[in-house]
Image (cartoon, rainbow, N blue to C red; front, top):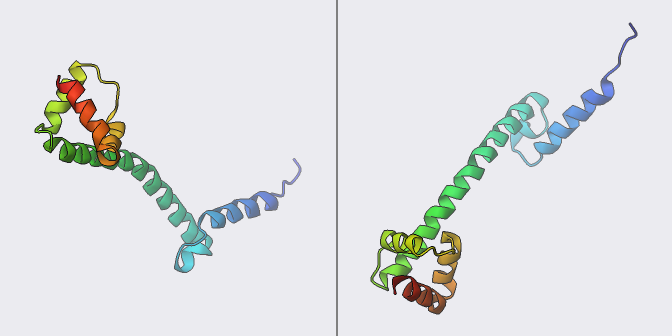
Length: 115
């Protein structure tokens, strides 16, 4: 069987690894062994935090809506319960944006849901 030289793939793999580690501190940006571990760990953090971002945003939307609903004499949970029964198609993100940026429109939505 003929000999296979894999220098091109070897260099390419290391080059891509260092490209991903660009901007890291200390030896993690230019030492292959350290960069490999750092990039792997960064990838796992990125995956985990993409999920966490969704949780944090939803919590933020709930807080914003709750604060806006207090002015209308409603609690967040009661409003969501009523909205679900009335089949309100707006989600929490849109409702919190309405509450924050367009309070008059939010007031109309609350009036329509509670009526």
